[in-house]
Figure (tube, one colour):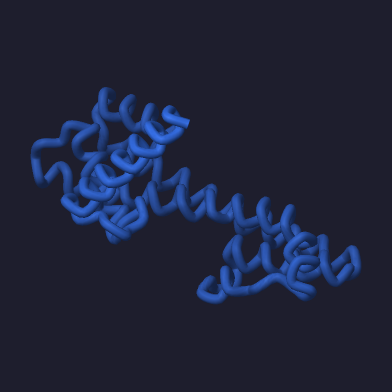
Length: 176
């Protein structure tokens, strides 16, 4: 019982300490993402790439941001397609109805997210094979477009980096 009390006291101290550090850094109550995750990623990118000159950084920053956004969009499209496909039946059963469309509300038609939603609806409604094949082709096309955009953005970034910076970008996952 004494050890349990000691452990509880230690856990409380750790939590209080974490809360104080969080409050001091201005992160109290905020998620780890914070208000400007892209700005932080770019600043870390500048440090990693060891860019001192502001003019050079302006060129690299624009291209790195384009890569990061294209990676996010492509990965979100893949993740959405995978997660919604695997969870569609469970969500419908849990709520007694079709899954929420809130994730697609702000996505224009022709994006992987909207195409995933369309395909999911067709699968759930047991639509005709032809309709499903058409929706599959559209989703694959959207994912291919996002992948092509990512590859173009990566090539644009690669074109302005030194070999050392390119190696850092590959190791950081920004380039292939």
